[in-house]
Length: 217
Image (cartoon, rainbow, N blue to C red; front, side, top):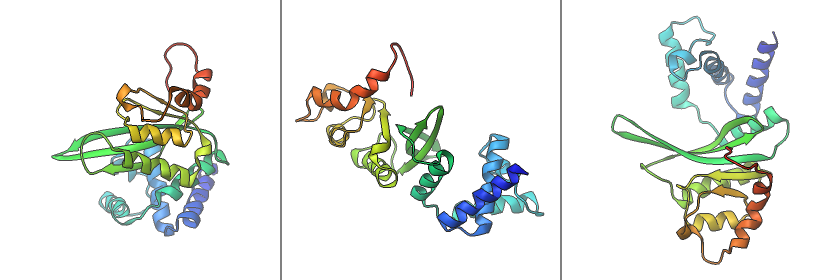
């Protein structure tokens, strides 16, 4: 009964804030529950909880139609997800990473900005790159600007990225906005005009809280 009430609340929120049709909201809700129950993102697994008397084929068609036709406002979705779970916007540890694989001959290359709150980590914003390999400054900046527009940089507790995410413009951007970052830097990545004291000023609060030895975010 409680679970059913949560379903209805979830559907109501989507309908009101994302301007989706009620049937699309119900489809999405069932797909999420299918993902949780089955632990699988394949359409056959997502179709399991769909409340319809049709055949499996018709359920799969309903899911395909959703992905093909439903416009998703990812910024509004991210804001609703965070505020619904945490009640208010929390301080977040941000992680920027990239995942690349091939589907046939096509490269599928996602740049993802995720957030960690307590022991929970979840994706917030993403960009599908139109090429293989690393991202550039503008693509990374776009994701962080989405975060600023949706939540505000004041809610960044820390920002982590690996050595792939370097470049003078990029480090300068982080320093200019006082974003406390953890990153593997090469000497050539240091921007002109940025002194070591500037990097320490925005990053030292993180290192003060870090325990000795290896740790992960």
